[in-house]
Structure formats: structure tokens, C-alpha cells
Image (cartoon, rainbow, N blue to C red):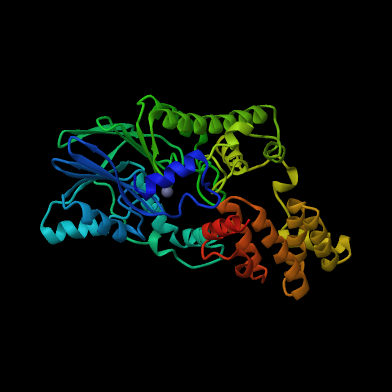
Length: 445
Ligand SMILES: [Zn+2]
């Protein structure tokens, strides 16, 4: 086995874990994962993954690359095969899955016909949305992956995307050089998701419906996700008895039993969150009470591929609420709230000053009551954003929170907040990206 599959084995058996080895991290590179009828299939592990299958009519590629790294992947592919690209499948329209430029340039250079590029019919709508919200996406991705507040327009969101030239609605089966490729749509992480199955080699390409972490079904900064439909898709995948699972991020899983277990447990996790949330909603509970009540079964939380290193269960509960409820969370003062700055000033006044409130935040932090500490720190800083002492305490509370949190999404937002408050999280958070800082922190421990 090569380094990717060796590493995959280490993760599965627990010699390594996703806290110190983020699913989006290293090792990266191209590896042969299957040969069927002398036709090879490679897996490229990158920030996101690519699957490349040879056929007698050229290559079928599932997710050619990210907008920002497809050139590296293209080069690696061209070192192992010179076959023309016949078909590209986008599992969904996220920018880390739809980089295709070098393949199109190659066709133009060689006078080859362009590949058929297949995606669900909602992919094009997503591309249009990205263009109109490129700056917003710049903000949220800078926070999520960089822990910083603003980087302006994200260039990967404002490019001319290569839209699918073949789209479908529910399912599509194609034959390329005698190789059958089955595409099925399900809403899950996105509204435009496709999962792909190669029946001959029994290879399943899940897209981001499996990413070696708790499903990204809660993401606080992004559009709606669909936890229950996601679970249904995972159960449908099981029916094929796949032998190789190629995820959208992270490493392959080899072997029918392991794959069944991974798909089954991920579906169970999503169903559990869905069922508990809906049951409490049906009792008229508020969002506040639901997010503090729903709990996941312990055995699921122990699985190496279900760790909350990227997203987390509490956020998924919120997204289930958002899908089935409205934005009103059941707390009456939240319906038409006073501006936060007015709330902060009133609380600071009652507490006897911002300094008192900030120092109480520090005490709560030391007692391990980080949720409460963050409220107090935020109010104090809102009241006195130019006071150095207050800023220092407030940012310290948020850096401490970031250090204790496990998910990229929470860590990114808390680091960005500490920065906004004038703190210097770089000294303590180490890594260049939020994922690296998560990994380095856990390796140090
Ligand atoms: Zn992805």
C-alpha cells in the first residue's frame, strides 16, 4: 500500500486520529486504488479529493480539483496517464470540487473535444449565487479557514465557473467505454449533491456526504443543509455493498464491512439529531432548550470517522430547526431585539462598569464556564472597544475558548473575534490556517 492507504489504515484502527490529522490535511498525493480489466483508478488526496478512472474511451474524473489546487492535481494525473478526459462529474458546486481549468486548456491546446461535464441541475444556480455574493463568501471563508475577519472578495468565488454541460435531476446512468457510472442526487451538505458508483470496481464516490468527520450539516456561516435527506442517501449507498469508499475529504475506506459500518453510523448520527430535534419541536420547545437538551449516543461519538473536528452536533441541531421552523427561536425578546450595543451598555451600567464585567468574565473563564464568560466579555468589549485593558481580557477569553473548542468552525469564529478585539491569537494559535492550529494544538498535548 502507498502512504495514503497506509495512513487510512492507521486512522481506522486508531493509531492516528483526526484531531492531530485534520481530514483536509496531509498526507496528500495521487495513489492507485484499484485496477479492473487493466483499467486503473487513482485517488488524489488533497484539501478535497479527486477520483480518476481509466476507460477505453478516456478518463472519467469525479471532482477534478479545487479552484485553487487543480493545477497540482492535473500535473500528478498527467504523470500516470495521458488518456484524454472524456467525462468530469462534479459531486457538488463547492469551489474546492469544481476546479477544471487545466483540463479544458489541455483540450484546447490539443484540439480535443471538451469533456462532458456532469452535475446536478442546481450546480449552475449555485455558481450564479457565488458570483453575486463573492464578497460575503470572502468574509465567511476567511473566518472559517483563516480565523480572520476580512479578506475582501474571495477570488475563487468570482471566477468564470465552468458550468456543467450535462445536468440531471434525480439520477443518471452513463456508459463510457463500456464502464457503467451511476449518479444519484440527494440533498445533504448541499442542495446540488451527487454521489457516484462504479458497479464493476464497486467504487463509491460519496462527495462530501462522507468526509471523515461529523457531517458538515450544521455550518453556522453557510446556507441550509439537509440532515435527514443526507441520512437517507447514506442508507441508499449501503445497498450497493461498495468495496472502496472514496470520500470528498479525508482518506478512502477499503472493505465492505468497514464501509457499511461507516455509512450506517453516519446515517444513525444524523437520524438521531433529526429525530430528537423534531420531537422537541413537536413539544413546543424553544431553540435554546433544544440545543442544550439534544445529546448523541456515546458509541457514535467514539467512532474515528465521526469526530467533531470540522462541524459539530450542536450546529446540526440549529440547521434542523432552521429547515423545519423559522428564524424565530422561541425567545420573545429575540423577536424584535434592542441593538446589541444598547443591551451591552445597560448590562455594563447595572454591573458597575465594563471593567467589572470583564473581570467577572475572566473569573468565569477560569472556572471553565466559557459559554457564560464569552457573553460577559462581549458586552464589556462592546461598551468599551477602545479600552486596552478590556480588549485584552475580552480577547483572552475568546482565545481560551478557541483553544478548548474542537471544530474548525467554532475555532475559526473565536480566533477571528479575538483578533477583532485587538488580541493576538497568532502567538498562541500557532498554525497558518485554523485547521493547522487545531492539529498543532493537539500534537502538543
Ligand atoms: Zn468539500
